[in-house]
Structure formats: structure tokens, C-alpha cells
Amino acid sequence: MTQHEATGTVPAPPTTGVAGVDAVLGDLATAFDLPVAEQSAAVEQAHDRLRRALDEPHPAG
Picture (cartoon, helix red, strand yellow):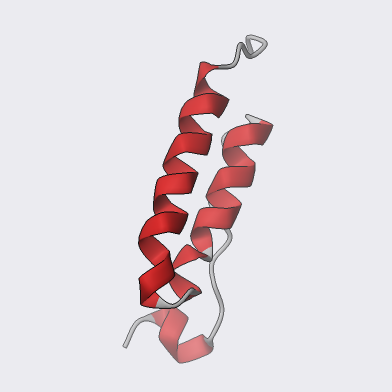
């Protein structure tokens, strides 16, 4: 049994400092709580959102 299963808590997703990426990681952290039939679509949407977020220009530093 994993710690998540034992405690019922989900660890906070990592942060990158890029708001768009952090938002997707937050959503992705809960994607596997969805019914199995919906998980694939949620992960595909997260992938698309990450690609768009990473394609945007970001300030250095």
C-alpha cells in the first residue's frame, strides 16, 4: 500500500515557477483519481496544455 493509499492524501505537485506548467501539474496530480475510462483523456489534455505552456515565451530567471 502506498502512502497516498494509506493516508488518503495527495502530495503537492512540484512547482516549476512557470504558472501554466504548474497549473497543469496540479490538475495532473488528481487525474488518476478519475474513473479509469477518463484517465487517458485527462492525461492527453494535460500533455497538450503542457506543450502550449512550454511553447510560450517566459521571462528569464
